[in-house]
View 1 (tube, one colour):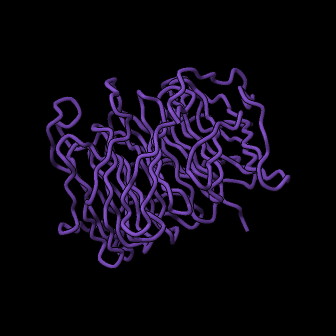
View 2: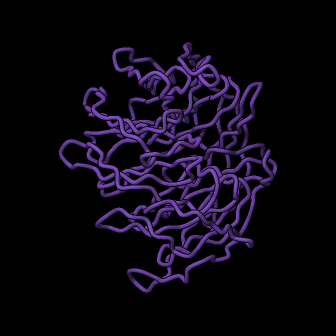
Length: 383
C-alpha cells in the first residue's frame, strides 16, 4: 500500500481511468446520489451532483448547482430532504445556504443565513433536524442556527467566540475553529480548534437554542498539533482526531455517558523517513469499526490504521495514493465496501475498494473529474 508515484485524473466527467472495473458482490447495479462541495475560487461552478454505482465503483457527474461562493463543506439532514452548505469566505460575516433536495439530488435554493464569523468551514445537522451547528475557521467561532419547518434556516440563536493561540507562528496566532461534531446522544458538540490546540465541548440546550460550554470536558492537544477533524468509533467507547499541522491521529477513550475524552495514543499518518511538506485533512472510521483512515495533503495519500477492538489503539497499515493532488474530505459507503477520495488540486474524485479483512484500498478503475472537490456527501435512501 505504498503511495503510487503516478496518477491520471479523469479528462472527462465520469470517465473510468486506468484499471478495468470489476464488479464485486451481487451483480446488481445500485445507483446512489453523491453531492460534492467545491472551491469556486479555484474554478468550480458550485455544488455538483454525481451518480455512484456502489456495485462497480463507477462515478459520473450529472449536474451542478451554481450561484454559490465556495460551498466547501456540506451537511444533509437525517431524512435526506435538505442540504446545508458552508460558504467559505475569508472575511466578513460568513453564510450558510439551505437547499431542498429532490429524490434525484437536484437542489432548490431555500435561503441563506449568517454565521457571525468569517470562513465557515464545517457544518452538521442535529438528529432531531432542529438545529445546524457550524464552525467559522477564520473567525475562530462556533454558532447554532434553527431549522424551520420548510428546511430553511432561521437567524442564529447562539454564537461563541473562541480565544487562544499556540506555538505555530503562521497557523496558530489566534483561534481557528475547524470542526463541529455532535455526539450520538444529540447532546454534546465537540469543536476542534486548530489555532488553540484544543477540542472544546458544548452542550446543546434544545429548548433555548444555546451552546453551553462544558469546561471540564475540554481537551488539550499537543502544542502544534492543530486538531482539525474529529470522529466517534461505532462502539461509543473510543474517538479519534486528525491533527492537521503535526500529521498525526490522536486516539481517545470516550465515555458516552459523561462525554469525557482521555487521550491514549498519538500516531503519525506518514511513512517513516518522509521529509516533505504535509498537512492532514479528514478522518473516518469504517462502519465495522475495524479500521481508521486519514487523508494526507502533500504526501497525497490515505493512511490506514487497524483498530484494536478492546482498547481502540491504532496500528499503522501504510499509505495508499489517492491518485491525485491534495486529498481533502473522503467518504466510506455505509456498507463499508467503497471509499471515495476528493482530490482538490487535481480535480478528481477516485473510488477504491476496501478489503474487508485487511482494510487495504484498491483502485476500482473509476474516477470522475470535478473541479476543486472538497466535501463528499452521499444522499441517504428516502422512505
